[in-house]
Amino acid sequence: MMASTRVRWALPVLVGTVLVLASGAAQAVPVTIQNPSFEANVLADGAFVLTITNWSFSGSDTGTFNPHAAAYPGGVAPDGQNVAFISAGSAPGDTISQVLSDVLTAGVTYTLDVEVGERADGLTINTYVIQLVAGGAVLASDSSASPAAGTFATSTVVYTATGAEAQIGQALEIRLVATVGGGNQINFDDVRLDAARQVPVVPGVGLAFLVVALAGLGLLVARRV
Ligand SMILES: [Ca+2]
Ligand SMILES: [Ca+2]
Image (cartoon, rainbow, N blue to C red; front, side, top):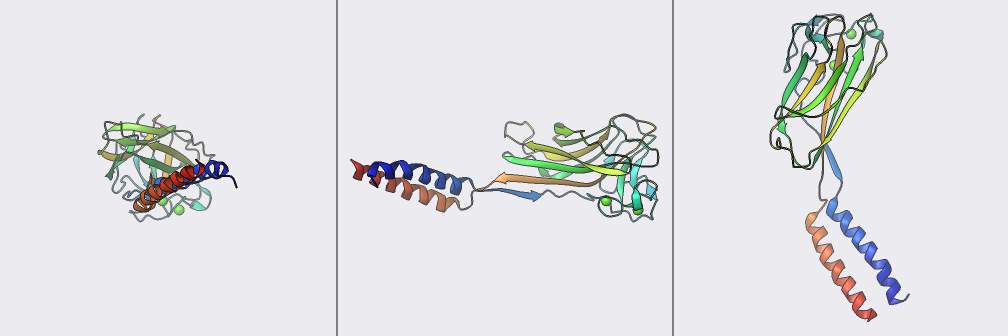
């Protein structure tokens, strides 16, 4: 193989290898949410309470519900036994929320997933929005889930903190909002928030490899001339 050919092949291979070592892979870890599946209250099938442990909420017709078979086939919740609800007596904008102990961190991609349900027993789904919040400011939101009666669908928010946000270092918050009040009900369950960041696999090895690789490339170039 000609020296010039070796150089042509060597450069992209070395640069590619160094980039892989230096950048690493995204590691997703769950962010702690208290009572994320609304199971803190033990309720009989069909029972509800106007409380949601660990969550704050506005309005007077919001709480925890163990669905009966009329609401969802088999009386089954997406996760565990219970769901949260914002119901008929609610006003537009009534909100279930929890401020988390984790703070908004630069370079992290957050993925918020919430199961959103429409009861099958005539309580038409309320329009809703789920929001990822930090320091009281809404970072991103989703209102696109459209479950059929008697089913749940996943609503997802994805947000990457660039580091330019004024809310870096401030507490994250999850909000589940009913955007139209009265006459309807919306159910939420299985709230999940993951944080993923690019992490170096072995930064020291990557840097050492870079030095050796560049030295090797220099030798190749030197031998060619
Ligand atoms: Ca649940
Ligand atoms: Ca049930």
